[in-house]
Length: 384
Image (cartoon, rainbow, N blue to C red; front, side, top):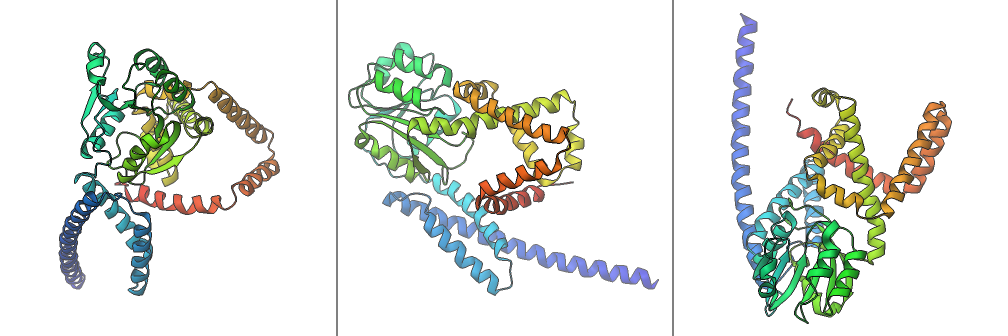
């Protein structure tokens, strides 16, 4: 009897506390709505002034101040930072919908070759939000291409890598003299050379380091490889910065060398890992039940690859002959590391580990901190 009364009392206390928590949560929702409304006003002011959607110094200062205030209130500083970063991501999405300042009002229209593709569609959306007239030219439109190109101030090529250079050489030789010719291909040397040969006007190579499913360009990277007459297209770089992207300028050859490791080798490694899981007939449900957050994240990255177009990744992996060298080197290093395991050379493994750790230097603890935050987010997403 006494135990039953205690249970009833405990249940009543819990229900009361949970009701109070629900009330606080509702207050939070109202505050979030108020913050988003204020962000929309900020976006309108930025739009009018032509300011970038992303202001890194303002964000850093705000986060530092909120962390100090949280610490003084006995709230974990990382908690408020996590909440604010998620809020800011939502804010960037909302600011985007307000539109952006148009940097080049006298441009003429924009033509996106491959505009019906996902990345072409994203750039079409961003340019339209910035006040430009955008026309799409796709494979069924070439009979009308002369009329579509007439008066164009910017032509952007975003088609599969394996046809990019041929398309430029065969189809883009009669653009208006002052028209800017740019591409969004994930390799840069060959497309930039093809554009320089086909067009006598301004030429620019761009590589957006993100997929078409990003909701906002805030904090995203766009690589710029200069071609010809950079002053003529400086406005476009400024326009992309207003969208919130960070510009990284580099030479085409240096970019392509980096892509052998950043894209080709990484994607090929993920492909082989998925292929191995398939051939081993792995039970993904069971793997998820026993997985640590870091393995779940790795498995998610592999699964993400196979949720997308095989043609896209074949283009990326096969785009550069030099990628074969990078992938072959990776295989050689894998084989050498495997030989340590086969021979039971634990000391050799530890020595190699320490050598690589020294090579990473300060990046190793930096990556550990960054990955810890990502892994905590992955763990928070678990539902079972």
